[in-house]
Length: 117
Image (cartoon, rainbow, N blue to C red):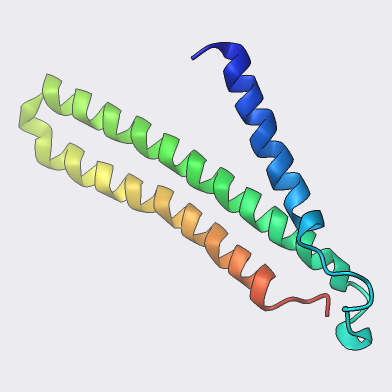
């Protein structure tokens, strides 16, 4: 895949991500008056939540891949320490995954416990 094709895909995904809240927005007459002063910011909260969770999951996936790769290389070089390496790898993977779960908790708090209404 050429670099121009990759750049075009990245720009298309960014455009869809940034313009989706505008395309899905309701007209001003449909918005109730009692929704609060900051009700228009919910689409930006949702956008930030999606982007943040995506970055956290992607970073967690890269970190897990690197951890497993290093552990498998270490086990191949010294099979006698398989148990200790495997145990430490699982603990590390659990800690990496906990960061993604914390991000998910923050995203759910922002989406469902909306403090701006």
